[in-house]
Image (cartoon, rainbow, N blue to C red; front, side):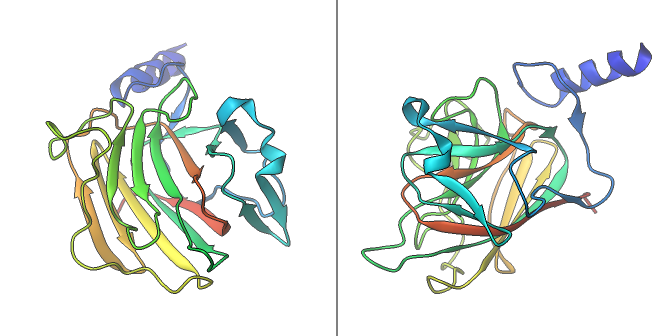
Length: 216
């Protein structure tokens, strides 16, 4: 009974998840993608489109066609962690286009949910979006469709090469690195826990690893 009360308190203390469930704070390495199936994941696609037309797994790699728009997210909610995503754009022409890593996704699922987006758009990887009502100290007073621009030049690799996106979620602060270079930060976010996801937003992409580590 005491454990249930503690978990319920954490659900309210670490953000605005609409469904009261256990929020895990990682204490060890957690592989989010098992390389075989989507058993730990759920989908939200525009107009309730069949996710199998957008997402598949081949040879241990997730493939996303980018159409229609939507997202893949964990069934489990997390807070206070480091998430790493190893991914790449597949096609060069006409352009690589768009995707993104979503952290602190809130219920209910919708396109698009309340969350913090680490932009994956071609030549803009590292911009930060506060989506669907989420706010932060740096974003207050800015239009919802205007991102916090990345610090300095892009660090993304050539289309077809693997990129490593690292996002540190510590309390209500979010920091992001791309291929080892610090890209951006936002603080005092109004959400500090939730599900973790990947966008389908036009980019034909592959993801070969997604994992969590504890904060140092």
